[in-house]
Length: 404
Image 1 (cartoon, rainbow, N blue to C red):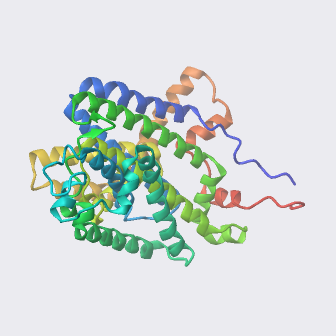
Image 2: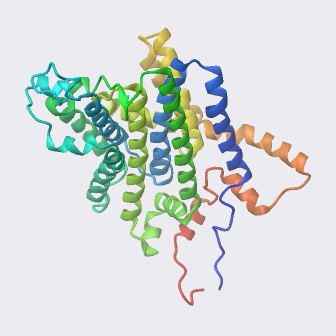
């Protein structure tokens, strides 16, 4: 008996194309035209958090793995980039007044006389780019193998990720001579000879951030539209059935954790470039929980919603802290509670429930037909989740020769 092909819908339907186009126009045209360079740099900072939110959509929304330690991977990527930028700023000529010229200032203050061995690869920009991907990816792989091969999951996994985030913060603060301590790595001025503090450089870095974000969104969309995306849903909704179908569930969990770690690390590296420093405050529990809030507000099943969630929450955080500095934590808490209570599917759920039906009626009125069924299925999926829980679990079952 021939099995129904559940993957025959187009990768890019009308709704997905419109989502990409709307986001691209907003980020590439409207915001640069409407904001001064200071505010645009803030938006670039917000977009660096959007990488983390996209990773959480894959890990939490589709994989069912709630990581409360994404700040670890964001910080690892940020520190990798900061180490390169700090070494570029610590030439013997620029540090001639130090006891040991040619090393970062905080090392000299802590009486180090030579550059530590693990700083050496960060003298090279290509090696730094590789390490931005490799260090968090390997860390996530080791951690994931230790957790998922021993079937640790659910709330226990979330608590352990919080503990690891706390441990990493304490480690970074304690090793002041190697990491800059509580102050972090600061006074980052140039990247490949370009002064990153100038308005022109900030504009270039903003567009680089936007371009990488759109590429990341497209990669995440392709994954969610593929068989792997359906398997992630099946693992989340019916893990035992996937196991009985012959798949190693732990490997899928490790993969999606590593992927979300790499996405977070890219955001951390871009954050460092645009802000000009990296500190342990972005690695700890508070920062990691805030990153989950970005994803929850946008909608944990929508990669596009995650981007808008990161933008809106961070804008609200900036606005509240500027006008009511003593109330911004309460405002953030109220926002998260309101979303959980009244809009559990986030901004993406509001769009799907109220705005999308109106747009669908408009499109049908102009087209004069219901359209192709495959296209409609893809439009309904939006970010690439056309299957229900039962269909996703069924899709995980391999086709066996002679099966009926």
